[in-house]
Amino acid sequence: MKINEIFNSLQGEGYHSGTAAVFVRLSGCNLCCPFCDTQHESRVEMDEAAIVEAVRRYPARLVVVTGGEPSLQLTASLVDALHKVQKYVAVETNGTCALPPNVDWVTLSPKDAWLGAEAAVVLTEVDELKVVYDGEHEPRGYEDVKAGHRFLQPMDTGDEVRNARIVAATVEYIRQHPQWRLSLQIHKILNIR
Ligand code: SF4
Image (cartoon, rainbow, N blue to C red; front, side, top):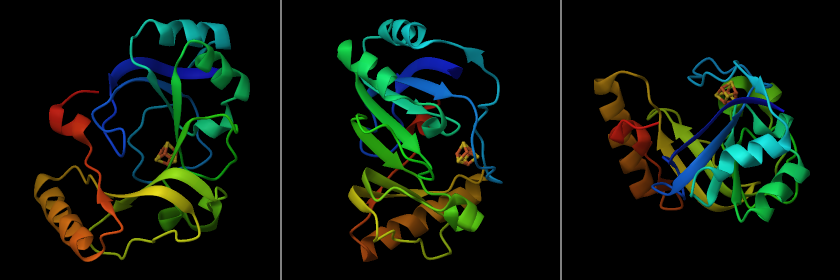
């Protein structure tokens, strides 16, 4: 399996925000988003046993498998192996490919609003939906996707003034559309990984 990095931090976004987590970043993605800020291309080869061993070094029960796009590599046998050491396996996906059925938590972060058909979502049921909002364009609701929680996350433009405007617009949007909850990238606020 091609691994970009394994590290210990707090989950910064969505339902598990603030929870200690081990992040397993898989290398490679099937999309090429213009705003992608994840350095996921560098890689080392690790087998499942080595991945489990690296994850076990940390006490966090929550393991967040991310990328890149984790569905391109993640296997049911790795999820099983993580379960055997009492880990809870969450996956962050763009939703374009099927996932192993034994993952514990699926976070869907669709990219089709920017990329169109090449990023079409095939998942129909997830634990949480996380949609990035630019403060201007009506966010797509993905009503066809069954989701336990629906989070709206202000886009990070890298520009403080613009970001403040987008956060204010997101708060106002949620006031008017209470099916959404606010997701902030608290790792950026806290200046941690
Ligand atoms: S789906 Fe995620 S990792 Fe892949 S290019 Fe888009 S933002 Fe980057």
